[in-house]
Amino acid sequence: QSYAPIDGTLPLRKEQHPMSDLLIIAPTLWREALQPFVRYKNDTAMPATLLTIEEIEQR
Image (cartoon, rainbow, N blue to C red; front, side, top):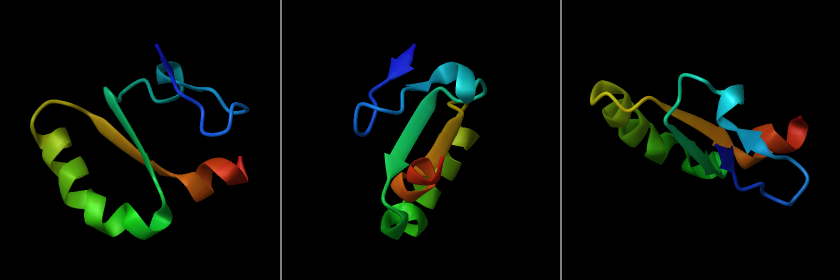
């Protein structure tokens, strides 16, 4: 399964985060606000990973 790339240059594949069923990509500014959602999804049997756009740009 492939995830839509941010700018067409960085394909994000589930294989890069094999334990995640949900990959959340958001600006760093939203990280703190999204943490309760990520924790909830992890606690309810849907593993989630939160990446920030800035983290992706650094790759």
